[in-house]
Image (cartoon, rainbow, N blue to C red; front, side, top):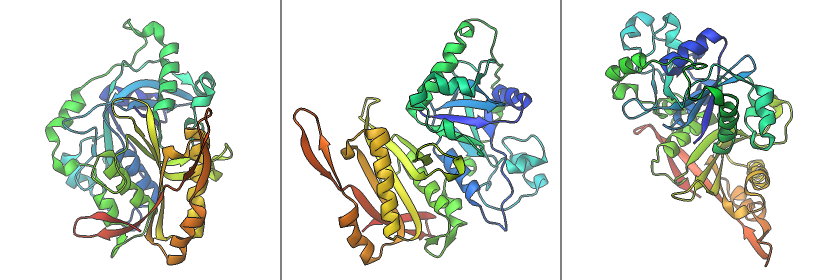
Length: 375
């Protein structure tokens, strides 16, 4: 399972959110009836949430856990009110009765929510970030780059390392009635009675309000749609993947604002096991692709090979998604998108990797979806 670490301002908020089992990001207002990249990025993160993923909270250098995303009816994430994914500022009085989470007039900025349970409980004792990172240094990649965001997503390996240190530091409280935050299902039950299809969280309106004819203005909106179809196992050209995330670090540690990030990264497990079989890379260009985009893809392919597949390029599947592919770019794929590598040790075997696929996208306004076509 993956994990989400949510950033909070104070202990009062922490106690209230844990008690209710509902979290919502307070977003800034849209600009000129359009979403900005950080709005679309937040939605993308919500779209990848699945029941069973772990939940943690970060406040004043400390991380508190442990929770688990839990469905209400058939999902664990929702719009806070109908049409909350449309970039307009509603009037509080008109939507007050339809709000799932209503704390004040500012609740109109809480557009998306997710639900969770304690798992096994939320401990009152938080773990300092330095202690967390020192507990298993090789496992923490994304957590080291937790900066200027409301929350982050971590993969199964990093999630286990974080869960381990919190459990070890709180082992004495596991089987006694002390050292734990309280939890109530009253708000979740209230939400359950209100839920309908109008609260479903999808990428359709994000695409619609970022579109111009069959073109999408923002790459982040394309990321949101791809995250949606992969997370929900919708049939697509990209196939089925067990984990998907966006904006994953792909460079040695340096000042956060200068770090390279992959548009989309994921992996697939061997069916029935937690053993990773393949890694996924998707690089997105809202306009036409160029040679620089191909080089960027291969830079990230090499990073995945170094950090994740450890020399086995055959574990990597890469996609370059763009509105158009000029002929000269298609020809360059044969020269750039290949790697020679060695498989095995005794005996050794030479192999060649060429698994980069070029995918054109077009926006279909009739379905509010993207249509993908392989070049």
